[in-house]
Every structure is written in C-alpha cells, then in structure tokens.
Length: 504
Image (cartoon, rainbow, N blue to C red; front, side, top):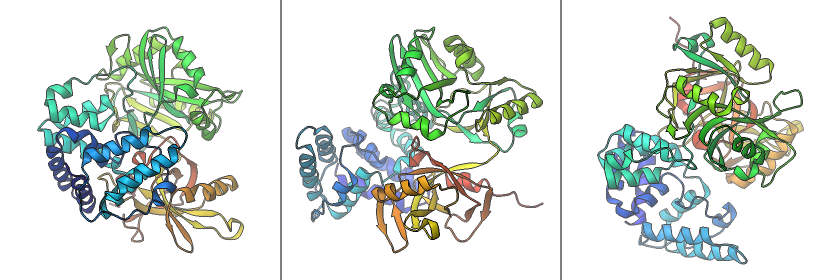
C-alpha cells in the first residue's frame, strides 16, 4: 500500500465533521491494508508502531529536505525506516538518525513530509479518534463493535485489535484475555452533578477521590510491574511499591489504584511531588503510598466482567483493609455526606460513587463511576500563551485553552486564563513552551497540542467568541497534568454539558 493513501485518508477524516464519513473513510483504507494493517492503524492513530523513535522536535523541523515530486513511498518502507531510526543507538547515533530521516523525507512528497512531521512530533493527535477507529475496524472486518471494543480493552493496542479483527474476525477477537504483564486501559469516572444525584444510581460504594497518580499493578509471583494511567511502565522508579506488592498474600493479581506521597501527618503532599517520582530512574527519599480500589484478576480468575461487589471482595482478600481506599459500602445519604466531608478534611479532592453491579469497563468514562468534587475542574490542552504585562512582563502567561473534539478534529478553544499561575509556574512555562512552539506573533506563542493543564472554573456560559459556542467562567490554573496526554483531555461535549439548564 502506498503511504500517500494513508496521508489522503487522514486529510479526508480531518476535513469532515461527520462521524459516519470518518468511519467509512477509515474502514475503506483498512480493507485495502493487507499485511500492513498494523502500521496503517498506528500511523492514523498518531503514533508509529515503534512508539517514540528518538528524533527530537528540533531535529525534525530543521531537516528542510526538498520534497519528492511524485508519491512512491510505501507503508512498508516508512515503517521500516522508522524502525531503523528507533533502533539506532550509541556513538554517532544522532547523526545516523538524521541521515535516515533525511533519506525518508527526501522520498516523500510535500503532503507526506507534513504528515510525517506531525506523526513524529505528536501533532497528528488522532489518538483522539480512538472511538472512530474502533468503529472503523468493526466495519472493515464485518464484526460487532462491542467485540472490537472488548478486544481493545484487553489488549490496550489498536494495531493488535485491528490485525485480529481483519485476519481472524470474531474468533480472533474473542481470543484476547487479560494477560499479566500487559496493562489494560483504566476505567474512568464521569463528573457527577451532586452526591445525592449520584447516590440515586442504586446500590453503590462511596470512596475517597485521592489527589494522587493512577497506577495499575500486575503481580505474578515475584514478578511485579507497575503502570501509569497511560499504560507507561514505571516499575524501576517505584521500588517501594514493587516490594509492597511482592509481599501481598496472593500469587497472581491485577490491581487498580492510586499512589501518592504523604506528609508525616498522613495528609497528601502536592501532586507535583508524587509525579516527580514517576520520572525518576532510581529510588528517592520521597516514598509513595498506594491505595487500591479495584481488582480485575486474582489467582487465576479474571474479574473484568464481574460486578464491583464481587471485585471488592477479591480486593480485600488480595491486599487487606489497610491498603484499600477509604470509603463506605451502601451508605445512607447522611453517611455518604460524612465520607465526602472526611475526604475533604484529609486534603483529598472529593469522592467517587460507584455502582456495585457494574463490570470493569476499561477505557470507558461511563455513568457507573461518578466523581463528586466541590470545585469543578476540567483537563484542557494548552494551545498558545501570550506574553505577560506588569509583573509578568518577560514571562509567557495568559493561556489559550482547548477542549478535545471527540471525533478527532482540531482542539476547540474555550477560554483564556492567567489566574492561578505562581511565579514558579510562570518561569517554567517561559522555559518549557518554546520546546513545543509551532509559530509565534508579536504577542503570542502557539504550541503543538502536548501539555494538559487542570483548570478550575465557576461554570460555563454560551459565547460567540469561540468556535465551540461556549466559554469558561472564572477559569484558573490548578496544576499541570504530566500523567495525562492530550487524548485524555476533556471533550467539548463535556464542557457544553456544564451549561446551565434552560429556564422553564
């Protein structure tokens, strides 16, 4: 398959707002992909099959290679070239990578060069097209959407799911199971309107919503692996968690939970201090404490499809009460209010209300889990920053904030803010933002979508100022979220859902 077919399809998908049209375009390409389906899906999803290939933004934008006049590159050749770049290491590796990339870009047309640049710098960001891609895989293979979604939930990888669907159909998709050492996508909570409303879902458990970092732990005897919410392995950076899990009274287990650094009085330390451990290559003095809230496998039994009530029983058997996140099972409204108050008093964000009859819906942000926080926040993408005035002169300050288009279009601007920025954050932004710069004007530095920031707000209002038709009210920066990628940001639909209900 020619690489230009991928580039053309990507452009067609980006040019339409119709979900059906996106699915049809992608499915048509997948049917023709043959043995290159893994690479095709990887490219369209915004990441090479090799993941990061080791080429930095500066290296790529400074290539400036004359484009080819005609499209001749094949998907296979592009995939092989990127594999060669990724495997290059040792003395002289930077020069060798530049040489390999130069040869690849020299064989690419202008449109193909542009696609490659976006792909390798993370700007393509069609990871946000995940739901559309899953529907396209189902359509191309002639299999059920739920079969595809379940296989993806358990594999965590779109290329694996697509290859199975298109080569083996429903039977191959059914062959995916939970495998120790292969992380699954985490189940997510939706914002709840109020505690009383969330309690109305029926039998439930109310748990603290900790201000920590999400972890997924796999244990098979003494073999332990720890993953982040983005499925990145951090086992080597968290030896205290590994030692603790090795000592659990079970042989094989997969746990979902949070970890955080605590002060001597047991209160959570700032989120940034917890996250600093995730980038470490060796043990530091700042120790992490885990709290687990779900168990999806225990000693040979998969529990993904089991109700939460059953998974909770397994969780207690696996880790004991001391490591289970605090909360209350089937509480009265008065008891639930007390759990929320206790969580806030302890320095946490709020609570999560979970339906006891719900299965573990990996990768889904459904209504079975609802987070209740006194201050509403959104995770948004920084699109640009303006130079500051007054005491902020010389610093990149006022942030342009974007919500994710759930169908993979460009990020939708929903507001600006410089509120909440400390002197430390202003200095960090001014140093960090140019690393992600695409272009600038006299007053504004525009960024590729890379940085996720948590924004507190008092509400949302209709507005003609921004394309999405909504604007944030009294937005302020809470913190940056290095544990999240742009596809994890909140969607424009989520932002619009916060609009006040029409009167009457």
